Image 1 (cartoon, each protein chain N blue to C red):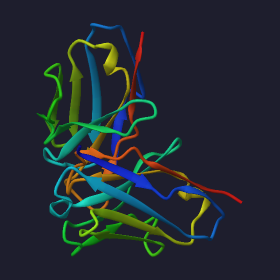
Image 2 (image 1 turned 180 degrees about the vertical axis):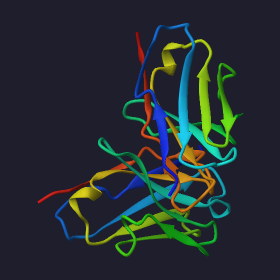
Image 3 (image 1 turned 30 degrees about the vertical axis):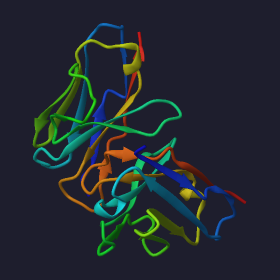
Image 4 (image 1 turned 135 degrees about the vertical axis):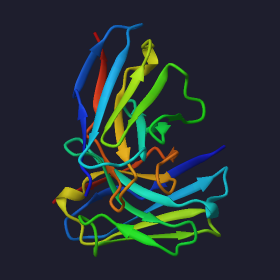
Length: 116
Length: 108
């Protein structure tokens, strides 16, 4: 079954860290670029980060640059998002999504709540 | 950064009627536009890419058109499963990849 499954979300305090994972199955993970996209009620969908199929290129939204790191382990078919120095405004549902230009497969998302 | 603007915010339509959703880009994006559908509690689903190419499994009643800065998503005869929120997304100038704020299609 072709799917993406996120995990690692939770409730954390501002200034702390969290690592999200996205497990891929049913397709050749190492052939696809992968993104993280987040969604908040107030701001809709916001692109967060992308990593090329081989990890050779990574790009970040200005809002997370310097705090978040995207990575992947193609031997484990898993995508990661390391989130440091979390802020209230990082509260959102985080989705991983497959694709380089547009997103043809999405996970169900994992909720990250940053609150003191 | 390219800003995507969708209109209207909410569209009230009766089942069987046509729905027309608009998406405008702040500068030309050629045909590098995708549309997604999102239902409550679910992840977005790709409907259209390349402004007019339907993704796998998307019914023919859903179509996309436009190029440059003006784009349209049309649902020719609304079915119950079509009531959802729809987002457009540009991939002409990146990073960042940018989305519109969404149009909610609700039952009239």
